[in-house]
Length: 137
Image (cartoon, rainbow, N blue to C red; front, side, top):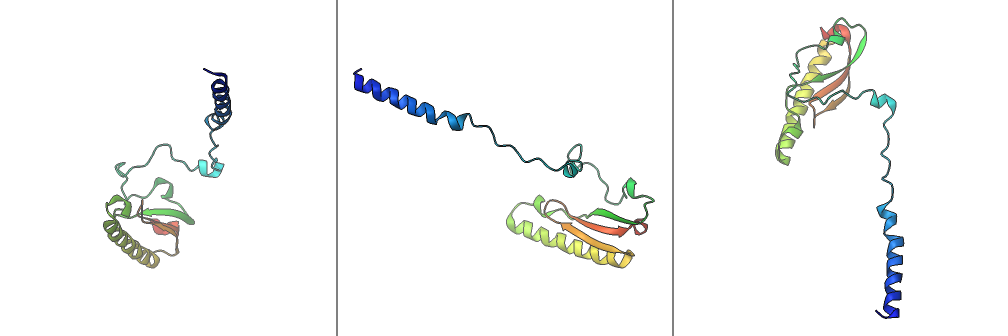
């Protein structure tokens, strides 16, 4: 090799060695940490639809409870994410919303105090509510 080619090759190697290692050896970005209050809410193992949860059974922590309680009421229609296809999901979502509206209407009449805190329809068909514990029995 002649001197000019060797110098060009050495310059290229030096240039590449100064540019390439920076992204290769860069530290992975830190994932943001959840606040402790959110970490305390994490369940031990994932909950699946096949876990045998019976929707008609009142949670043990609510039996004999008094005062206002925040509860999640799971309804029977499948959530919209469980069906395939955009049109089918939209139709299922309408069924879920209709079932939730009917439930909320009946619960308003049956419970002394019933306040809807939120509703879920995509991955879970449920209504979150604040209700007087006496009306749960």
